[in-house]
Every structure is written in C-alpha cells, then in structure tokens.
Image (cartoon, rainbow over all chains, first blue to last red; front, side, top):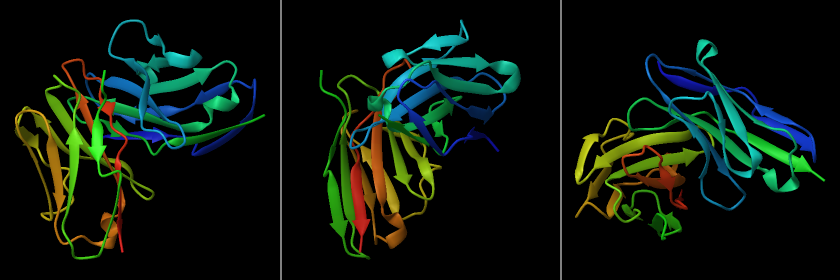
Length: 111
Length: 112
C-alpha cells in the first residue's frame, strides 16, 4: 500500500538550532512531493514542492528539502530555527491528484 | 486574491442530524478536493472533483457521506445521520493544473 512516513512526531528545539524532519514514502513511479506547514490557528500552507529537476528545493522562510530517489526520502531542513517556526509540518506525496499525507510532526521552538 | 473559503468555521450538531459543509474554491481552479483531519487518522483524502465531476469518491468513509459541485465552483459536503466518529476538521483545497493544492481554513465539526 502507498504510504508516507514521518519519523518524528514531536520535536523540541531551541532557537538557532538546526532542523531536519524526516519523510519517507512508498510509491512506485513518478511522484510529486510537498511539505505543508500549519501554524497554530491557521490553515495549511505550502512550504515547498518538488516535481522534477534539481533534487534540492528551496521554499519559503528559509526551508529547504532534498529529494533522494534511491532512499524514497524528502527530508525538510532549516539551518537555524526561530520561535515563529513553531507549527505542525506535514509531508505529502501525490502520484495523481489526491495528496497522501504523513501523520505530521509537531515542532516547538523554545526561546 | 481571495483564497479558499469554507463555511461554517465551526459546527456543533447532535448525533443523527445531517450537516452540510460548504467550500468556495479559488476562482478559476478547476480541481477541488475534500480532506478530513482528525487526531487519530491524520489527514485523509475524501473526494476529488474535476469541474463538476467526481472521478474518485473512494475516500468517502461511508454512504452517509456525499458531495457535489455546481457550476465548476462551490462544493458542498453532506454528512447524513452524523456519528461521533465524524467529528473532525473538514478541509477543502483547490488547484489549477499545477498540482499545487491551496487549502481553506477548514470546518471543525463536533458531533455530540
């Protein structure tokens, strides 16, 4: 069955720490990959996406993700987190129209 | 421009009642999606519309759930005879041909 796994359910970091959130998927064939973020009380927003080309993609607010096809991974990174990055992060994959989401990672950044 | 809007933002209903949830997609977006976000299940796909047609209804949890879209725009998700397990946030998204889905703020449904 097709699935998306996010390894960390809850992450707590101090400001200025580096962030890496893992995402693995199990799909055959061509996929489109996404990271969405949900800030407290707000709706889901697209952070970044990968369709094709350079496997290192840059998104908003200093986030980036690397697609490693051989590992079926699309990990999210940020060199230095801020308190305002406190949110829930969702990895998503689609090979057609519907997005299949991971369970999400709740990130808390402490001052 | 205006994003995806959903109404109501919150709905509390008694078990057994029917509810209707509305989604207004971004103007010009031909594709519309419904998802459900709940604590136990995460984000689940429910149904997809291309124009007014729903080629994939496979995500609807039961025959109590139905959805329609009219004029290639507004969509309504209807849940009949609501059950407590239907309590969740119902999210609507829309997209053009770019596959980027833009989400609305959701409707929080509580079944008492």
